[in-house]
Image (cartoon, rainbow, N blue to C red; front, side, top):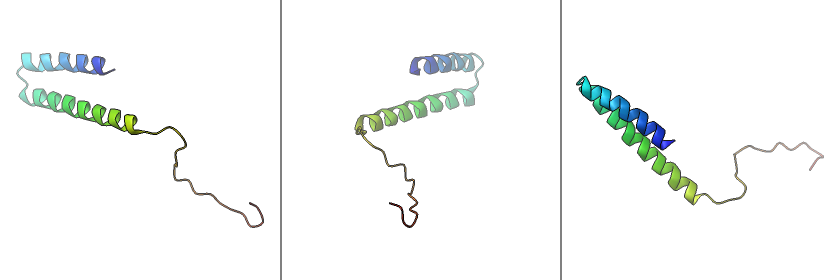
Length: 67
């Protein structure tokens, strides 16, 4: 997935350079860097995750007379 995204961005970057679209070039570079940073953060988070139950924050409703 990363290769496909970077490959597509590489094509856009090449086109922007051919046409001297300075703002587009900077935008593509910024998007790529942000994507790489996000991917790194997701991988770190996944590596720290412990297997088991996950509390999703849904409260329990108890009815009187029932456990």
